[in-house]
Amino acid sequence: MVSSRKTTSADEEVAEVGKVVVEINETMNDAGARGFLRKGDVAQVCLRVMCMAASVTALSFMVTAREASTVSIYGFQLPVNSKWSFADSYEYLVGVSAAVVAHSLLQLLINVSRLLRKSPLIPSRNHAWLTYAGDQVFAYAMMSAGSAASGVSNLNRTGIRHTALPDFCKPLHIFCDHVAISIACTFLSCLLLAMSAIQNVIWLSNN
Image 1: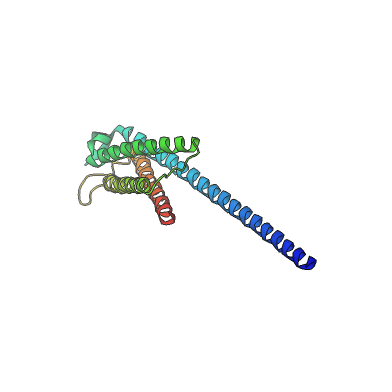
Image 2: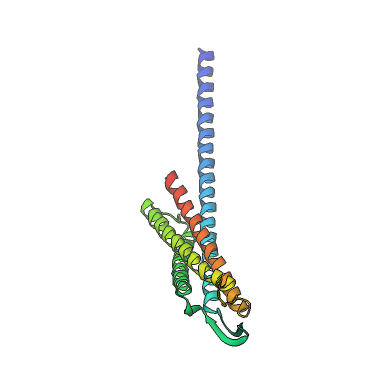
């Protein structure tokens, strides 16, 4: 009888120790998951900051793209003046970049406020879908704006074949450099928006 009671008591102690170990493991797993989520939140904020910086750079370089010079056509020196507002595609890029700056700033303020309150950046699936849709729309808009502006910039650099129109980027190199930097930042902003959308897809697939 004494031996049986000792065995039962030992079994109960082993069971209790097992429960404690399971609870500790669950606690560590939850902490690890929360830590992973916090890293994901920080990555999302970093993406917003970089996207806003790229969009602001694209916008600022485009609106400051202007230059006056002279160009030689058939031996005649003619004055040329170039400004971003002379091309519809450049105006489109400025408009889209300004919209992306506003979108990124709004999302950044929301994310920072949630981080300060130690609440999740994505509180619900509806919020994730809404953010995903916005990022997708603006990513495609930036892609189209960059592509349209690239066509005009390529024409400025190569001129028109079988005509006397020269490479306008030689006398207007400052203007063309500003436009090139703006277009590069436009495509970079598009990439960052796409990465943000992918993060939302990952969150939706896990929740």
